[in-house]
Length: 549
Image (cartoon, rainbow, N blue to C red; front, side, top):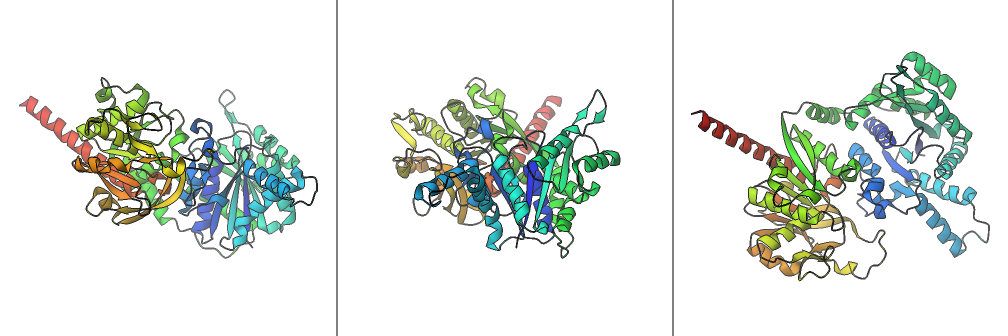
């Protein structure tokens, strides 16, 4: 029988329930337990696939093609395991399932209600992963904040499971905020007390209270929180602000969060946590030997979570190279032929990010041209690869009207076109080319040297593709398709022959980057950026030396 940990949040959103859940999972995993994590989101969308990134951050895609919450990316990056469709459930998916059953007559004419039908479906999905026998511990993060109307059915499901399952099989970890009032110069516990009271009124009593705080919790404060929130003092955990999310597992280990849960579960057969690789990663991250500046061109730059996996992949690749990666946001809407050198001249590398729609497209094309002509290391992901193809078609092949039919359905040269299987699709949700697909890489190419193999699997999320009718003209002019899907012939990777580092991929390599397995493309991109920076420094030294003499 698996053990179940439920992570709830109070006082305010964005406290980091996903990071706490992932950190706890990492510690239990490091002690030899088989762990998985799932996220229950209270919104009515069936999945975040149709949500604007400004609304919910990036849409994370799993191996099996599920469009999920970005917290699943944290789970995979921390635990170094794959998640799936079963690891992310929304209110929309729950109601959709229950309504479909009602239409089929599965409830035998009974009145369908939130309790028991909705809560039963929530409980079924909460227990599903633990009933496979593959996991010792299932951590379930409940999205939203205690007191939200949307989260009530999920909290009620947790209450029922606490009652139905043996006491040693469940634990509730409640993450809350201890605000610091500068005027009074003290931390205030009242919001936490109210949050726990509200959770208790809904029938759920936390076993552990994790306190987000800017200042250290004194023993007196811990004692006060324990007294008024009805938990043991050792179960009041300090979660101080950390310089990086990857420090949090070690902070939680010092606070003995994992040991408190193990004690609650009556699990005594565990080993000391094996975190050698994690600590080595942190050493390289905290003490880099060099620095590079990478320009990130996208259209959702105002919200950091919109490109969460890309930013984390840079952290992993930077640590692997013992290099600090400074990511500079570049708004493509404001790039013109006149100012492109000014905006990109200080960079050591350029990444054009994924996205949809026509906003900022021409600026991206101008930026790609600059990188191609100046020898600036270039990396294009999904739409970024497509922009590289359009730029090459216009400025090298002479196809002035080359474009994507996504932005210009009437273009005379659709070098990027809608995939055949997408042309009859009307519904938007969950209908893109999603999940893991094979790619065969041509030996002797940059891509082959990066991966070290001719066969890879990478994750996708797109509707448009490179139009193979133009492939011969591209390759004759120097841009080759170094990777293709073996079944469909879809171009997965393009690269320039005569360029230090110019590569675009149709898939999303950032989605599989973890602390222990950084994405190879990101690792090599940082190497190329370092080499470019060294060349710039040598050139500057030569010029200053010449002026001196």
